[in-house]
Image 1 (cartoon, rainbow, N blue to C red):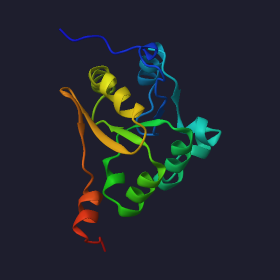
Image 2: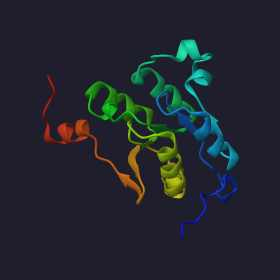
Image 3: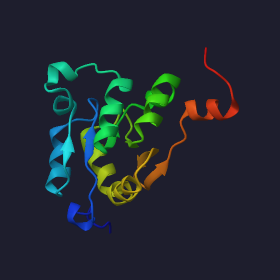
Image 4: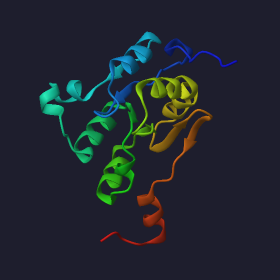
Length: 155
């Protein structure tokens, strides 16, 4: 038997979530807001959906970081491209990744299973990346981070 995902009132300061353009859905927004969490979208960040479409990761990440929001995304590629990985580090945000090919119900199930650990991680403030799995949130080491540690550069 699984426990219910935690309501925002479970936390002294509940995190606010930013749903990137690939993870925005009414169902996910409804799940999180129904539990009392504040949820933000690209349209809100840029003033309209049209202005937000196609925004580069190295543009929206710093804006989200300034707000202190946790990111819910499906784009693992951001952590493969060194310039976007650097933008992520500078933005100082926690990111929670869901499989890009997942269906909405799968994403809902992942969030329900992982929400408690997502909130705990987000409350620590600072960068970190977690893959959401049905077994919980797992730390994810970005390929760009591994390259950086080894001192290699992508050409």
